[in-house]
Length: 405
Ligand SMILES: *Cc1c(COP(=O)(O)O)cnc(C)c1O
Image 1 (cartoon, rainbow, N blue to C red):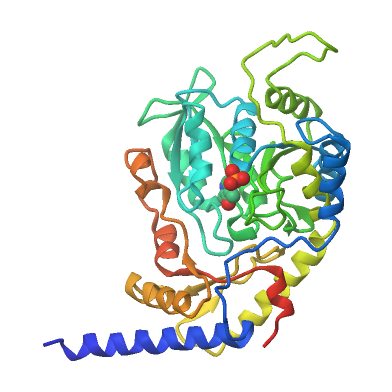
Image 2 (image 1 turned 90 degrees about the vertical axis):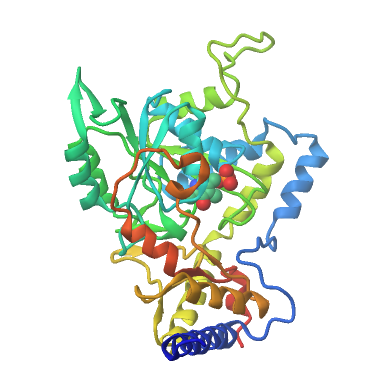
């Protein structure tokens, strides 16, 4: 027979799951059809610009929309320079190369991230080294990282070497989780103190600022993504951001097969990549960027509506943007109390999805993924573990702010 305390726990879990579904329904209304986590919206000049590409024949990897998209991105973020590429992973790959990451290096990466952050490191032949995040922002924990680097790094021949693995540590990659700006000023300080360049994974944070400064402008280089589920989309796409004109030029060169500019000669001065964004995709991006302020505004309103609804539910809260920042709330998240277990999370996920509200947990942590089981890591990854156990993402498309129940 099931002991009474287990039954009680189960009853509490079921009641909480019911309360969560009711709260979501109070914000989104009843879902006749499945409501995805994040849908793209093409209600501006997308069709006009894409049609223009087809009408003029400029659909491929050169054209006026690519130049315009890069200029618009640089202006919107204040980054100085933007180089548009085929996806966010390619942007990260280039960004890491630009700061000098080489095969056999190690790169510091949060264990709480989408797999692309770690994969971009691996694609160079380098090794991701996983560290913990902290609660105010769900990004890299600056203080913990500082102590950790002080313990792990030794300087040999001017290089920062991991004294345990003997590999050179070549960069730190903070990621702005679900659009919430990481502790960038503190992280910049920590990176400077340890002599490591900072590469920002800003794939989720276009439209987010910290102290008025745009995510993607704190590191030496940053990567954006315009995948179909991101805040603006080009179908698939990404961009490298940097304030350094030389690095921007090098990013463009590497992304275009390292071809030396010439009217008819195919002469390449190193092994480059075919990473350039096609004009067709950039056309979509130009039209999407014209509407980003509205998207951010609506997503913030939606988060606020969820926050109000969840303030009446015990045992969890909406994840609120960190202090001094303005988040794009790319994906809204609720956090269960620290004591909650996976079974409670899964019960809520089960109920929400069954009620047609798409919901999902945070990513499986990087250090638990099969290809990264033996990667170097901080021993204490407890905050990321807690987030994995207690976080749930909810439908976050901007249009949902207009469909108030
Ligand atoms: C989306 C995303 C990427 C990669 O973007 P793609 O365009 O899908 O290659 C990288 N990092 C994070 C954190 C992301 O969310």
